[in-house]
Length: 277
Image 1 (cartoon, one colour):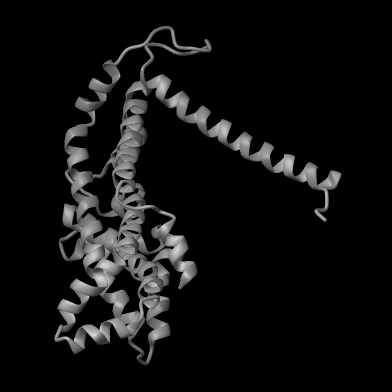
Image 2 (cartoon, helix red, strand yellow):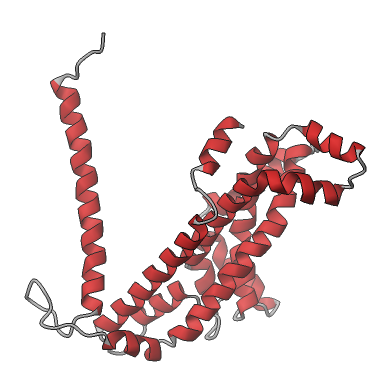
């Protein structure tokens, strides 16, 4: 017999749904305010702007050099995603299949960049990169972002690798496949959903990474999130509409990357496969 909900349980359910609805309404309100203001001519005490225009987007494009910033953002994100995959997947295989002294300590080292706030290790990391001459360039930004993303890929991929039967690798070796061929022809096709899911999360993380990029970027190597911060905090008088236009460009760029990635991977795969492992 199915027990009916008590009044207290129903009240709790309604309270949770009201809290979720309140959060969603406020979030949508904030986003709508930024979008509407980016098209407004003037907006002070009225519910809606006095008029609408698109000239703030042209002004933001010229004033903040958004063309160069977007190219830099694409280069940084693309390089971080590719290098994280090339380094993280083989390292995850080694961690999943090999036992060695100090393995738990190594796993702890992989966890540290993700549990420690980026600003904590970002300043000494930037100091080292400046001393070796890498900071201030696009490669300095890429190297800084690799510090948390490579361990992230490793930790995400380990459960995917552990669920694959080692006898499949042994069978491939029996038929003459070397380590590289076995890895590329046998493991990679089986691990493709996991790899895509991990790289999707790396992509989103890198676009939004502010601290490490801010500490290591130069005038010509700023990503969009750092350029947006500079536009808001820099000295001088700027129209709020042009800053909001830049924020809208940032939101659209992030959504475009995310939607493109979702064409190739279902993010729930990372959850279901981890549970099976």
